[in-house]
Amino acid sequence: MITTDIHALVGAYALDAVDDLERAAFERHLRDCESCRTELDELRETAARLADSTWSVPPPRLRTSVLAAVAQTRQVPPAPAVVTPAARPARRRWLVAAAAAVVLAGGTGTAVYQVQEQRVRDKTAIAAAAARQEARTRDILAAPDLVVRTAPMIGGGKVTVAQSTARNAGVILLGADAAPAGGKVFQLWTIRGTAPTSAGALRVGQTSAVQIVDGLPGADMVGVTAEPPGGSKTPTVPLVSQVPLV
Amino acid sequence: MTERARNLSAVPEPPPTDAGTLLREVAQGDEKAFTRLYDMVAPRVYGLIRRVLRDPAQTEEVTQEVMVEVWRTAARFDTSRGSATSWIFTIAHRRAVDRVRSEQSAADRVMKVGVGQVEIPHDEVVDEVTGRLERQQVRRCLDDLTGLQRQAVTLAYYQGHSYREVAELLSTSLPTIKTRMRDGLIRLRDCLGVELTA
Image (cartoon, rainbow over all chains, first blue to last red; front, side, top):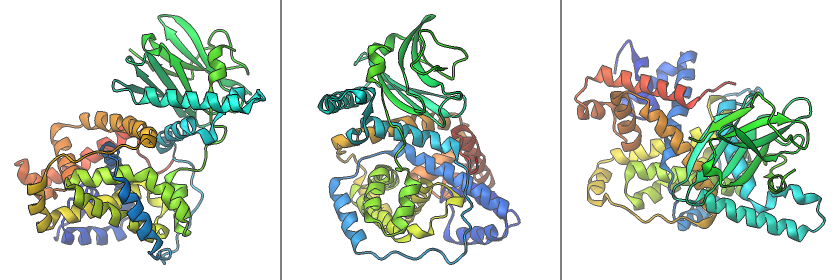
């Protein structure tokens, strides 16, 4: 395909909606155009996000079969072109989704469970509490009427609130890019009308948390503030993040 | 603090479980890292391929090809060009589209469009919820597109149609479809907050 405007195909190319000849022509075009490559990378990254909505659990036999095939498959060496992997700063916006995933994974995986009760000597009690909370978290998150809302945090990060009226409970997931400045801690609040109730404070330096809140569906908002260590009785404004629930 | 505060649980340091880290370990021949990467991305890879192909048997076959390809070529992943998951889904989508465009598959698909069983292991709940979060956002952003942008993008991505087929399906000119695919993706990019640099 000969055209002066081969670049107009960038969207179609990112969607794999071109034929083989056009694909080859477009790839030739890319070699000479750095800004076109950047645009393509971004559109391709965007197109890949469309796969987020296609989640479906593969049959377990597929896992067995893939792992067996991999054990028999030799890997190719890195591409000959020299890539200079200059340390890139974190890609914040992508990371918020990842942060939520980390929070979820951490919050429900017993192995990495850390409860504030860790100061209590009885480790059995801790494990039991963690297991209970894990089971509870799963139960809420699996509710058929689960509603999920998110809001960004000032300073980077994301607060996600998942609530179920059927369970009359919710889970607050906090994943911040950094702990609050000045040795402060994050504190979670549920707000009904104008009345705030503490839903717990994080420890100094702690940047992620999973918190179950009973009766959450009646609240109007979930807020996050930065407070002195140990938390405050009333929230200090301005809020670091707010997630409206109605 | 209150009762609630004592129930607060947290992860002190996020474990290195992002796909990019795992993929770099996979590139070093680490099979354990590959297993973890598989568990992390397989539901979306499988789901995407299934969405395009619709046939469960072919979906399994292509998913296997894709995951083995990820293992085989992990060293070719270039972080400066995008995220690890995007790299994997790009491979998956390309493979699915190649398959769907083969004539035999097209014939098979007509015969076999149907609903297969979905098995959800209990320990996938976390992924399920993460998936829900992302699904919501993608759907919201798709709703934000014009009708023609949305149709052009979804017919190509989810059904594997070429832009020529899309133009025909939508009775629209080729240049218009090319443009709608591009500006539709640009609008999606802005809505989803996709960026390659901080």
